Length: 244
Image (cartoon, rainbow, N blue to C red; front, top):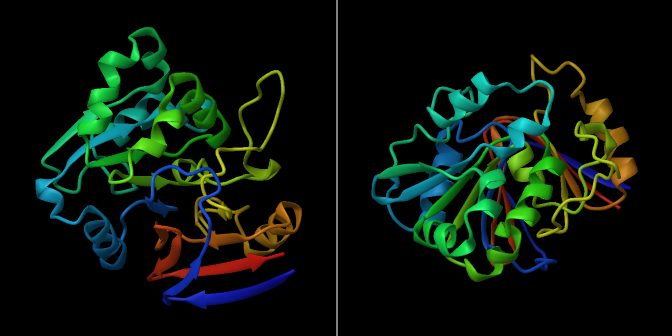
């Protein structure tokens, strides 16, 4: 396995989007935490945030034991440590994936199509993946090439092929670390976070060896921007890339 270590640099590479899907992704660890990530978001939107409508998706929270109804509310209310819903959007709506199968696609699909951006919270990525599939949102993604997907933590990891056993907290009858595989790389988030002492570089190296494919370890000042199959790391912090 080869690896590269960077701080505060931008790098590009090209990939094939393995499952089609949204072509505009901003995959963050801790939200829109600095000017570089903010500028990347504005570039993806193609217009000011103040002119853009958002839907926020808190669903991943309910699959993780460290998340609570209070933390889900803080995300929705724009009071979480990860700046997402509080960036000055033209409008912000709530899209709860667990409710969608009971109301029918004719009701919720237009909401998604009308949104400029989907703001997807963290929690457990496999739980989020399950409800993206159950709700039908995963199947809708290939028809939304102009929509921007902004993920934080699990909201980013769900787009990868695997998250690694290290990050699986939800325990369905058949446990798996497999996620949507829209992109061809995996993400180890919250690198070096003071409240997550287990998320060390040594842990990331062990995780990457198990993933055995392209991967990034990123801190909360780093994001991965994907547009038309081009990957750009946008960072004012620290990150590491791994390749098999």
